[in-house]
Each structure stands twice: as structure tokens, then as C-alpha cells.
Length: 226
Image (tube, rainbow, N blue to C red):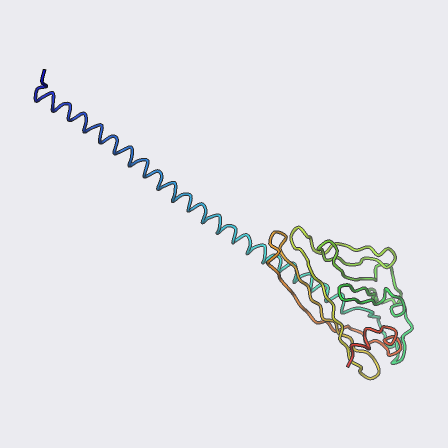
């Protein structure tokens, strides 16, 4: 039996509705795919931005930590072999006090320094009046006593990885005494980014001059003096 005109119209309408529904589903899927792609790109960009911000914050904190460590280290080294009223005990040829004779009073190498100074101005060397600086396990450390040679952590390797510490002595003879200067260079990187290196430098003038006879026993100074 041949479908009537009404039946043919009804069938055509149903087919059209199916086509519309199919097109709508495909469009919806395409829209979801596009939206997902945009969302993924946005998340990736956000993660890159967040990583860059975190890296900038870590680098800024590393600068601050190194600057603070350098300033404190320079302040301490400036006092090396300081003695209250040194003019009473030290002459242009010699010094006879508690802060001149022992190796702990002043020892310097390329990457380590040890020294003593009269913190309380009493003229006697107490156990807490020895200091020094070195690198151990990527941390800057400071000496805390004369007797035990204990070294306390100054910078934490989990935040700042100190890779280099260098001391360069300079000096000049003035009126028979040795005026001493030390150039300090401190370099560090981020623990998770070894390619990001930061270097701080500072030159320190030691507070007390060294008498000629004492200077002659510390060969590093005459060899580097003008």
C-alpha cells in the first residue's frame, strides 16, 4: 500500500527531527571539545605563570638571605683581632696580647677564615670570642667557640644552596703597620634550579692594623701587600 500524503509528511517530519537532534549532539560535542581545549590551555598558562612567580619569589628570598649573611659576615670579619685599647699592648713592631699569637686568632685560606676578637673589651680571650666562616654541605657555617671548633649553620641548604665562598686578602704598609682588607665573594643557587646563580661581593677593612713582626709570621699578608 502506498503511503498517503499525510503519512509521507509525518515520516519526513520525524526524519527531520532526528537530523536536528543529531546535529545538536554533534555541535554539543564540538563545543565541549573546544571548551575543554580552552580550559586546558588556560590551566597550562596559569601553571606556567604560577611557576614563574614562585621562582621569582624564591630568587628574591635567596637574594635577601645572601645579603643578610654577607652583611653579618662582613661585620664580624671587620673585628678580626680587634682589641680594646690596642695601642697599650701593640706597637709598630710587635703585639703582646691574647688575640695575636695563636692560629685561631687569624687563619685565612681561599674558602675559609678563622679569627678571634675582644667582644667584651676585657682584654682576655673567652671561649666565645673565636669566630670563622666556611662552607660545608652547601651551607654557610660560622665558628662558635675557641675550644671545640663547633660550626653553626647560617644558611639552610633547603632554601639556599651555597656553592662558593672566596676570601681574597689585600693590604698595605702604613707607618710600619699592616693595614688589612679582605674581599669576600659568596655565591649560591636555588636547590631546585642550579642554573640560577646569585653572587654577592663585599670588601672589608679590618679594624686593627697588624704590627710588623706579627705580620711577618703570617706569610699571606706580605706576599699580597703593596
